[in-house]
Length: 386
Image 1: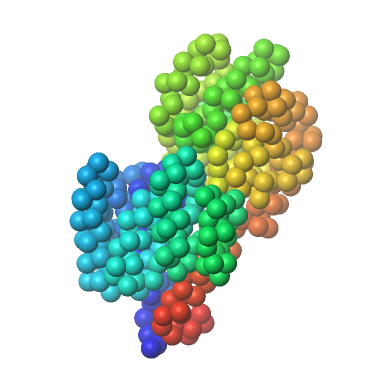
Image 2 (image 1 turned 30 degrees about the vertical axis):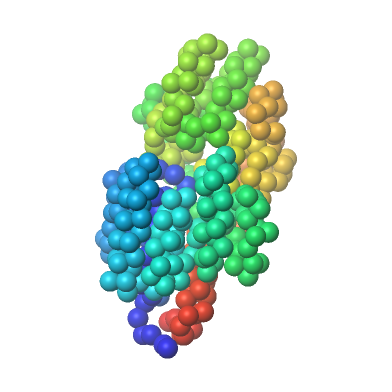
């Protein structure tokens, strides 16, 4: 059967809070080819700060999440979603995030709609039951799209899925006028209360255990004890804020570490920074790291997850073991102390992003996979050449 209209795509994520997965979903809403796809966005919570970036031609449907202590409520939601998919005559479902993959994926299978499951984070690394459920959901999907090879290794997923179902599509970034943001670096620092005359190390990450901020603060304390001049700005919110604030006071980092809270648009911060650090203990493929590299910042990151799929150690960044405060301090001390070699690392980092991690490449790859899944059930080959 052939069709002469765009495919009705139901794109789902947990929320519109600031995060790598959420930004990915927003970029799909913005850039998917409207000749090929009519996009509807579904979310559990539609009130996040990224909601303002959803294009006007993308309808948003909220399915408020019930308490996880009442499983029968989730079953009712599955039935509601199934009806929604059938009433809207959805052609394909693309889910992202843990609960979306589980709940919406189940509804899609019950409705008989082709399902693509997105794996974009370590949401289930420390929860065996959820990991088992996600593996089961992925095995029922028509396609599994991961943003790194590393994420496919979680729970042995790569070994449990047919190779034909697995795809890796790396995060991609839109072009950015780097010089525009560098020109306003003094203004940016003033706006967020950062000193103008000391090198700025930036970390953009949720304040959660998997991001490794405690190790970073210990590394900062060691740098300060050695007389290194710098400030460290932490952009992000999360459950560890009070613990990290206590650690900052204990280590006497009052005038060195600055908590900036959630930041909707980090481009001015990248333009104002001199170096970037991501001390995570778990990652898939961090968007913040790519964004810092795009700005030509010398980056220090940990050898976890898909980070090594982005950064080549000592070529376009520096890699250190996770949870190693001394190694982190030494690497940061190097990029602050040897500006010429640090600049060379940053320049090569920007080249890496320009060659391998563009928005154009990511969107094209996602569209091809969605169409390929649809083609398995109906003849839409003519949509490849609109």
